[in-house]
Image 1 (cartoon, rainbow, N blue to C red):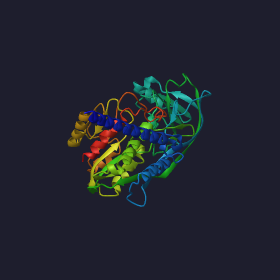
Image 2: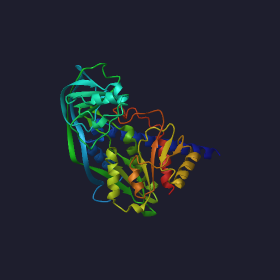
Image 3: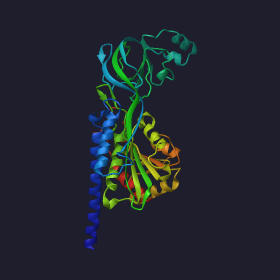
Image 4: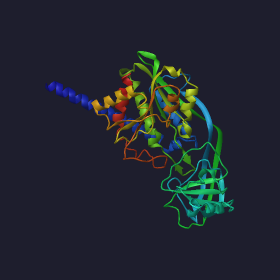
Amino acid sequence: MHTKILLVLFILFFNQFTFAQNKEYAHQIINRLGSEEFAGRGYVDKGVNKAANFIEEQYKSFSLNSFGKDYAQAFSFPINTIKKTITFSIDGKDYKPGSEYLISCFSNSFKGSYDLVYLPDSILKNKKAKIKFYERDFTNKIVVIPGDAPLLRKNNELSAAGIIILKSNLVWVPSQEHKDYVVINMVKDSFPKNAKQITIKFKSKFYAKYKTQNTIGYIEGSKYPDSFIVVSAHYDHIGKMGEDAYFPGANDNASGTAMMLDLAKHYSKAENKPKYSIVFMAFSGEEVGILGSLYYVKNPLFSLEKIRFLVNLDMVGTGSKGITVVNGSVFEKEFARMQKDNKENNHIARVKIRGKACNSDHCPFYMSGVPSFFIYTFGDEYNEYHNVSDSPETIPLTAYDGVFRLMRNFINGF
C-alpha cells in the first residue's frame, strides 16, 4: 500500500512538473514574440517576417517535416503602414502615441497645423442644423467628433483635412487602404477642453504587395500518416505606429502561437508520437482579414479532404472562466467528447459551447467543408486587446496548463 501511495504521489508530482515546464516554454515564446525585436509582428521594420523566421527555428528544433523545401508558404497582399511619427501636439502640448492617441492605419502621410472644429450636438437630432453645418468649408480644418457619433468616421463626409474621434479606449486595426486625409483616435480624457489647433507630421508607406508567409510543418502519424489533425494559430499582429508605439500582441496571438508550438514540441517526442499526422499551421495576415488561412485553403499543400479535424487557437492567455468553443454546436460529437474529458479531469472552469462564427482562421477551412473548432479562453482578469498594453509582462496565462491538457487529450482521442 505504501509503495502504491508513493507511486501515485510521484505521478502527480511528475505531471505537475511537466506542465510547469510547458508553461515556462509558453512564457519564453510569448516574451520573444511580444518583444520590441519583432515590432508587433506587423509590417513596419519587417516584424512579421522576423516572427516567421523565429517560428521556423522552433519547427527545426523539433525536427518537424515540411511539405516542400522549407516550412514557408509565401503570399502577398496590400497594406498601409505608419512608418514614422515626428510631431503630434495640440495647442503646443505633446501627447503620447499608443496610449493617448492613434493614427488610423489607412491615413496617408500628413503634415501641418490645422484649426479644430467641433461637431455640434444639435446636428445629431436636427436635420436642418446638419445641412447647415455640412455647407461649411472644412478643407483646412480637422473636425472633432465623439466616438459614438453615427456619421463621418472613415468616410470623411465633410471633406475635412482630418477627423479626431474621441473614445474611452483605443483599439488599432491594420488597413489595406490608404486615403488622402487623416483620422486620429484619441482618449477623450486626454483631449484638452476647447482646444484650438493641432500640429501633426508623420509618414506612411503603402505596399501594393507585401511579401509574407504561412509557416507550416508536420509530424507523421504512426497509424494514419495520410490523415491529418491540424493545429493552427495566427502569429501576426498589428505591428508598430511610427517609431515610438508598438503593439506586443501577447494575448492576440502570441499566446495561441505559443500553445501551438508547445503541442508541436510535445508530439515531436518519440514517446508521444501521434496516430494521425499532425500539421502545425502558423498563419500570417489574420489581423488584416484572415488572409493567410484564406490563401492556404485556396492553395492547399495536401487535399483538404484529408483533414480529420482542425483546432484553431486564438487568444488563450486568460481562462479563469474557461474556454469558448466556436462551432461547438456544429460538431456536437467532438464537443461532447471535449466537455466529458473536462468534467472527468477538471482541466478548466468551463467548456462553453458557441455556434459558427467567421472570426478567426478556422473560418476558411470550415467554409470549405473541414470540421473545425476555434478555441479561445475567457475571464475578467485581462482585457487588453489591440493596444500597447497587451504585453508579455502582464498576460496571466491563467488556465494555460489545463487548456493544454484538454487540447492534448482531444487530439489523442481521434
